[in-house]
Amino acid sequence: MSRFPPVPLERPLEVFGKSFAVELSSGLTLGPDTVLRAAIGKSLQTLLREEGMLLPMRQLRDGLHGRHRLSSTTKASVRAALGPMGEQLVGVLDGGPIPSALGQSSDWACVAATWGQPSRASSLDVLVESFIKLDKFVGTVAACASVNGRAAAERMLQGRFGQTLPAWRELCPDLSLEGCLRIESSLLVIAELEASPAAGGEGRMLVESPTLELLSPRAKPLGNWIRQVASAVKCANNRELADLLSRKRVLQKGGRAISHDTLKGWSAMKPGMLMSLAGCQSLLGAVPEIATVERLLARFALARFLAFLCDFLRSSVRSDVPSWPEVQRVLSERFKQLASKAATEP
Image (cartoon, rainbow, N blue to C red; front, side, top):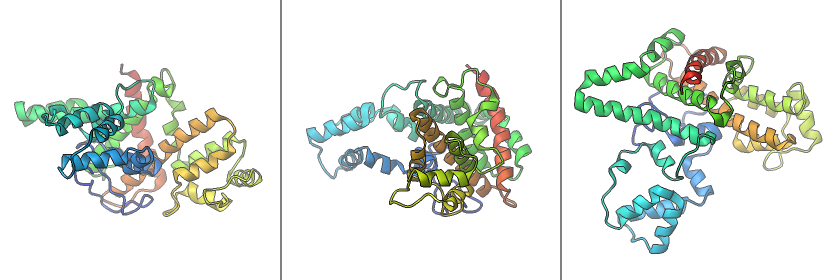
C-alpha cells in the first residue's frame, strides 16, 4: 500500500477503469504497483505470489506486528526472498534499531533493495533506478526546505523542473498539476531508458524511438503495437493477421480464437477490452523468432504504459476531454523535448 493518497482525477479512467487507483512512490513519481498494473496488468502482490515471495512477506509482516515469533527457517526464507533489505528487516526483528535509510526509502527504493547491485545493461534496473533518482530528488528538496527554508527549496525545484509547467501549459493548458508532474516524471524515465545502453539507445536517432512509434496518431498505442506484430509475421493488416492466427491455430488462454473482431477491439482499446499480458503472449505465438518475441513483449509493456499515460492525461484535464490523437500528439511532443535532453546528458 502506498503511503500517499491516490492521485485525484477530474474523471474516472476510461480504458483502465474507474476502480484503477493511481498510487504514488513520492510526490513526483507513480508507485511500483501502479506502473506494474498499467504496463502488464499485474499487481505487485500478484507478482510476489507468482515468484513465491508472498508468504515470506506475510510472515515478515506478522513478525513486525508482533503476531508471531519468526523461526530461524522463516528468517532464512525472508533473507532469501528480500535480499539486502531482508537482512536489515530480520535485524530489526532480532532487536536491532530500524536503519534510518530504510525508514526514508521510497517505494521504488524498497523494490530495488530486494535484488542487489543494479546494472545499466538491464532495462528493468535502469527503469527502477530512474524512478529512484527522481524520488531522491524529492527527498533532497524536502531536506533543503527544512534546513534552508522554502525559498531555497523552490530554487532547487526551479533548477530541475523550471521548464515543466511552461511546457505543459503550452501543450495542454488545462492539465491538472497532479497529472502534469506524474506524466512528466514517467516520460523522463522512459526517455532515460531509451537513451541507455540497455535499450541500445546510445547514438540512436530520435526518429527510431519505440515510444514515438507507439504514440503515432494513426492508431492508439496498442493498435500500433499490433501493427508491429502483423509486420513481424508479414501481414498487411488485422484481417490478414487474424487469418494467419487461424491457420496456425494460435488461440487465447481457454482455447478461444483470436478473431478479427478481437484484434479490432484490442487495437481500439475499447473499455472492457484492454489487452492483457496473457492475450499478448498468445498473439506472439505466431511469431517464430525468439529475439523478435522478446522485443515485442517489451514493446507491449511500453505500449500499455503509454496507453495508461494517455488515459491518465485525459482524466486529468479540467475542461473538455481531448481526443486520443490529440493526447498522443501532446505526449509525443513533450517526449521529444525530454528525449533530446536525455540523449545529451552523461
